[in-house]
Image (tube, rainbow, N blue to C red; front, side, top):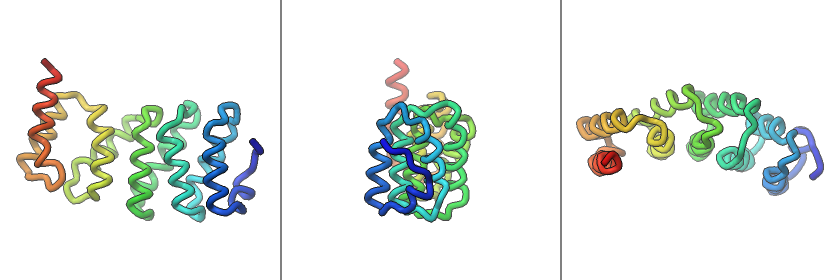
Length: 171
């Protein structure tokens, strides 16, 4: 795999960019890829589709420890600034579902999205995966009960079933 820098990458057409990312994803010895992926993700002059490809790679990769915090910070920045479309932001949250990118900071931000009844439904649904997988069962039941009590527009209707599933898994 030929090593290219960000300037060379930006000269490729979108299809070639995505193909290069896809090929580079499986090159385990190509450690330079993490720096390139980081730079691509940060560069909002690069198409959303190309940057979404990077997010998809992050969601399924073993990310070196030294690179994790950089990716977490970039993704959380996009989620806090809200300057990107919701498809891109949904892919940001899906990338954070990778356990390599889990942190207390990620959990805290996902909890805010998850609990906000006026938040975009896709963002809340994607955040729910992180919350469901990283919240103690008793606290999760309390959250679901609050969704019922507050008639949450997205989660109230399913919360009773989810509480039952938690209780059955405890038996």
